[in-house]
Image 1: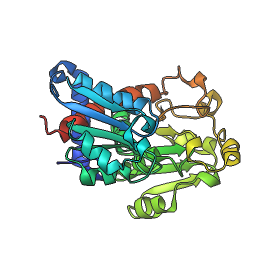
Image 2 (image 1 turned 90 degrees about the horizontal axis):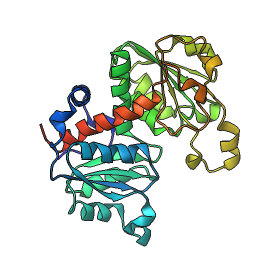
Image 3 (image 1 turned 120 degrees about the vertical axis):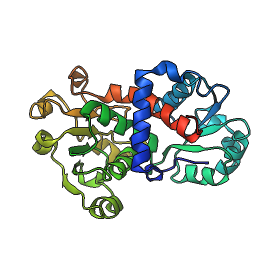
Length: 304
């Protein structure tokens, strides 16, 4: 039995195979409509979510399966003090696979140690979000036609942004990748990411506060919001939340085939005037999430 807690749980060959299957689902959805008939996915979301939860549910439904679960901890026995491990063991009696989001880092890992069915980490605090990373990789592969030889700009909250941490961890395994890390000083990529992932793998990177200085070099621009829920001090959040706002003016020097991505939800960091620009890929990115999660469910349930 396999779980997906961290993107490192998958080899590069397995990631490439998931992308291949997702693309086949996009091209031939009729082949997959009953692959999970009589299977049940449980979505245990202890933290609010729109895209991740609904894309998991849509993925299972389009595979012919069913969905059970809850969308906030207050509607579960966690409100009565039940542990994550106990919740998981109980829900495993009613389902074949579980997708879990939790505000505490490591909660899905704890769940996986006790679970009788596969656990998918759908985001744990500021730690990991591996299925968002798979979504990002499918987006890049579809929109750029490759996952190597790319200069990737990561902009915004690089300290608490779990999507950023997971994406860096995944992309360093592909050849000739360079990162431009764009953030205010208070929201830089954590030192352990730089030392243990970037420097250990000899990946070229630049840290800067200036998005316009480097935007012309980028193949991918990955915008992130400043996450209010990760701040202890509201004054710091208010000071930093509008630090970067991508607009037409800033895109003027960008490549014509730049791919602008965002894990969503968007607040103010991308102007709505960008939405009609052909370089805006963030809504397509959300759509790709369903297909890669379909491929992942099939893999973890060992369905051909």
